[in-house]
Length: 102
Image 1 (cartoon, rainbow, N blue to C red):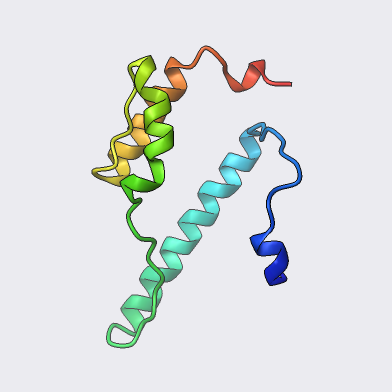
Image 2: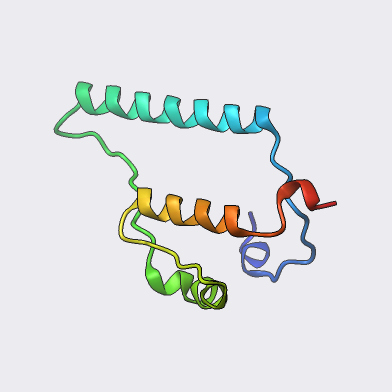
């Protein structure tokens, strides 16, 4: 991607409507990545170069957290599992579901 495009402001936006098949493919891709990473680490324990995502930074979610607060919702960034659970709680508490979107 050209640098100008990477730094450009978005020109349009659309809602992502989840499809069950997409979710399944995403889960299998994640499983494949984990399986390959384990095999690489086992085969080359001293020299394996594996990518690890950093933990989410609370400051990156300040705006969202402030927006959720008046609705009695909070994000928990203490662990990946807690973060996922807090996002699930927000989704369940939302009066708008993906079925309501155009």
